Amino acid sequence: MFSVTDTARRAKEASRLLGTLSGECRAAALNAMAAKLISCKEELMAANAADLAAAPGLSEAFKKRLQVTEKIFKYMVNRLEEAAALPDPVGRILEGRTMPSGLQVKRVAVPIGVIAIIYEARPNVTTDAAAVALKSGNAVILKGGSESLRTNKVLAAAMREAAAESGLPADAIQLIESTDHAVVGELLKQEGSIDLIIPRGGKSLIKAVSENTRIPVLKHYDGICHLYAAEDADTDMTISLVVNSKCQRVEVCNALETLLVDGASAPRLLPAVAAALRQEKVELRGCPRCCALVPECVEATEEDWSTEYLAPILSIRIVDGIEEAMAHIARYGSGHTDGIITNSLALSEHFIAGVDSASVLVNASTRLSGGGDYGMGAVVGISTDRLHARGPVGPAELCSYKWVAVGSGQTRS
Image 1 (cartoon, helix red, strand yellow):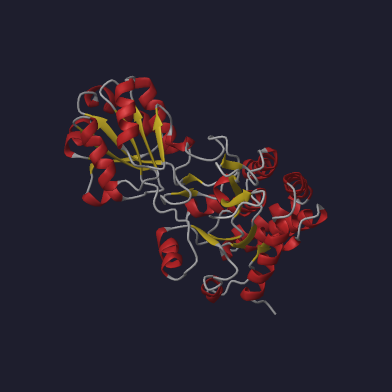
Image 2: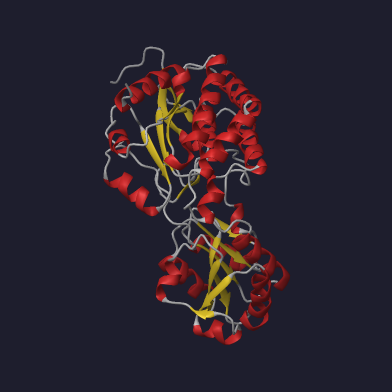
């Protein structure tokens, strides 16, 4: 009979064994997991098709997150292989010193222990979470949405089998298959066995998890991402960055939601940007000054400035200078990803210093604020917290540390 308590206990036991295994052993397991996914591809695709067929009432954006396309499948395999190739984050000496007494002191990176991931829809989270957790020596408990259960069962079974064949405890990866909503509540009570919970989903899920557990939670709230086109912003670059940031994938957390345009450059930039977005069928909502320059723009409401659309909708506001742009971001932003388009080193440095977000970009698409484009490989999300981990959460971010002191008989006088 299924028991959340038993699942958490077995994960804790597996985490202790994982902590004694070498980085080479864990890397070999990750490569074996990638190979196992390739061998069961047909079964995986059939399971995913069944998940999609069983959920006809879902929105198109949700279906996109649920579907395993050829591109997504290659992504999942590549992320496992990339995680295997990364330097081992466990055992890194973060700092060290020899005291006048001769005592050698060092701070060493160690696994956190057991990570529980609660998420919706996206099957690639299943493989990303396993890759990041195992690379950092952590056991992982996966609780995906019921809509993707068939897909996740195939993925988890393949990865568990590959892990066991490589000498890792199979219970280092566990998928909770129960669709009973009470299971999540039980998971949140496993304070003695689970060391960290990472919810991946909408604000309501994250809020519910945070308010109903004493286990530390790594949170990822809204992705209300901004680009500020400064007075000297290049027209072609602005068009390219805005279109890519908004349209490359509208349904993800680092897609652009608000464009801020300097009043001095707005007459030059906005008509050209609007024309490009019109080609992409993006609905524009703007301030009165923006609507005067772009006739098809609908006047924005106060709510628009604090909305994560995850849809082909963009809000646009004309601001008078960088200070007003930064004030807007401070008031309405979510601390996820914000960027500036400028040729001025002084402006870019001022923006970097003044914008308090997990990722601040200069002359680059907001879509680049992620693990792969930061050279981190697979990640389990983008944290908007300030403590422990901030921004993309990869293997190094799922490590804690311990102090090690080596002496030769020293005592306190």
